[in-house]
Image (cartoon, rainbow, N blue to C red; front, side, top):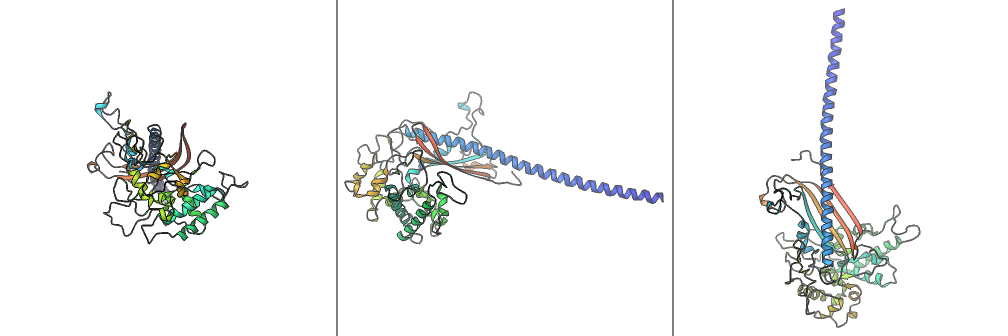
Length: 442
């Protein structure tokens, strides 16, 4: 009997040991998984910190380029200035410092500040090269509303003119603008919904993306944003929807068929009821054509050609990294010195363009909007965390890099700033962070 009881106790002990082993194994597995998860979260947190730091530094560099441009030459802004799209490579790399033994008194590694894990693409857009939709928020009887209303219809009618299958008719454009205007009036400033507050369930036009919320179903993503051209030759040089035709890589942006968002902006400047202006030295051909009535729209090509004659400045470099005193191409004496060609110093010089009337009164919309200076800009930055490369800098030849390169996180940043004599006023900020968790981070 005692032997039977002893065997029973041994069986229970064995069962308890087995249960304990299972629990220990489960606990070990849980600890291992938790450690792995926490490790990935930790790496993602570090990535986020590095990306934010890189973006903050790059945004400061972009502001410096804007400030440098404002104090270096005449008070005009052009599509060849230090901040412009054609200088995006410089803006993306200016300020990076890599290891250089010859420039360091403390050894070859003391100046190696370039982060090998973050890749930056930065550019600046002139918001005064676009149509400010806030003009539609002003009273219907004002010149601001009337001219913005007519200009937006013309832009919608023009922006995909070269692609007949996607082109919008003037009737389509009128319906879209009427839907937008009605919606904006419903969201107008009142005691129950004062600016800038927005009640739950209601909204205002605070960014271009808000256009997708306009009732009527006519403001669609396929119209608002770039789309691929199914008939495009992949070996073609690209589509120029920046400043006037051709496939010269210096002037073109190969993004397929442009969306309407490229020509629209929403920004409220620091001063109340700021005048609506469009910079004729930076705006696209689409916007320029829309500033004219259809019968005179071809004059936009002449304006583009005329101002491009001022794109080259033999007097000096406009490279901000070099710190040259030559200034931007549109600011020096070489560009447009004879007042016959080059960038426009004032809107009155538009009359020098071949085919233009002697008085801008002949073109009421152009006369209302035209300006030669910009004060509102979008600083746009895309930072990506890349792992796997063995090189010390992304500035090296990519063909010489070894090992896989995996994007583990991406951070997109946009800040709309107004440039003033005192500095910068931030008007709008939007961020998008896309972490990518990986099981094996090699």
